[in-house]
Amino acid sequence: MDYKFSERFLNLKPSAIREIFKYAADPEVISLSAGNPAPEAFPVEEIKVICKEIFENTPIMALQYNITEGYAPLREYIYKYLDEKYGLVSSFDEVLITSGGQQVMELSTKVLCDEGDVIICENPSFIGSLNSFRSIGAKLVGVDVESDGMSITGLEKALKENRNVKFIYTIPNFQNPTGVTMSYEKRKAFYELACKYDVLIVEDNPYGELRFKGEDIPSIKSLDKEGRVIYGGSFSKVVAPGLRVGFALAPSEIVKKMVVAKQGEDVHTNILAQMICCKFLSEYDFNAHLARLRDIYRRKAALAENLLDEYLVQKEITYYPVEGGLFLWCALPSGIDMIEFCKKAIKEYKVAVVPGTAFLTDENAYINCFRINYSTPSDEALALGIKKLSEMMANY
Image (tube, rainbow, N blue to C red; front, top):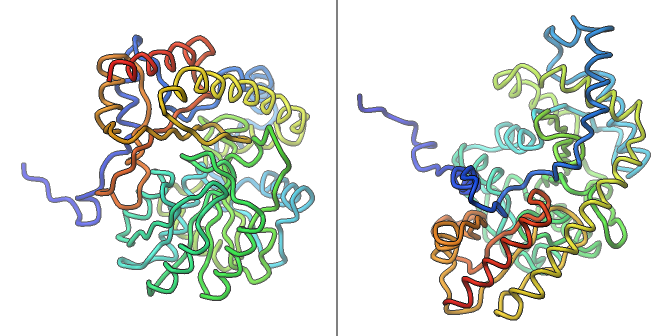
């Protein structure tokens, strides 16, 4: 049969990261390509106890339908936590529980954008969000990421040159894929430009709690006095990604529309997963858990950077040092083709990294960079993988 796909999905490509997972499933391949939390970061024993308590005390609630907005105790916890710890909440804001942080981007796009509308994004940026934007036929306009975040000059140029800009998308903390953090000065300028040109901001913050070096920087949402920022958070990197629990903090008018859109997608986020998250956050020492995660990633990031310094920097591969998150962004020397490098790495040296082109707003553009993840592999695998990349460079 000749299948006729919709125009919007006809040209969508599968995530390069998910495609590389197919190769990474080979037990001989060292995967430096995933974005998974470290295996030792999961609170397995605590979740075992929580599940037992839920099924002993409230089994029907955990197995029954619930409201689309989300499990009320979890929404209340998030609202209070964001207000008390970060000062994010304004009187016009509400919390919506989503199926992972990715759904915040999906719902934001559905309720705000028509086909042909413009979304301004960091370039490079997270492929999952870019594909959500593309799926409704939005036009993506990329603004280059500098060492302290999105170029403000580039952002204003994009706002001047493009009509129908519906929102600006940013990952200001430990950006995926570059690991870069936007400075406070840029966050203020960023918000001021959004006000000047009357556009919304979608602030994606899945990694913000994983700062292991330096001082926290106030979020863009904390600057919001006009109801201009949709803030997306997730428990994937700080509790467990398999639970698929995220949230949006946004003006109530936007949340109401997102609720309607979500009803057409999945009715509501898995209620058992929401109850697990809520109990873990409210009945255990979440701050102590975060401190443990930061210790894990501080050590793993330092190991990765030391290995890069020892084996790859001398081969003229450079990288951005990071203060948190899960990723390192590496730039190849001129004269080496990045696509061929990534193919050769996995096929001949059994090391998987993510090609930088996977993260570009223009799918036909090119960037001579690749992404490494240091959270997932063991110390031994990380060391062996980087040594193998060094060996490959020596043979170029």
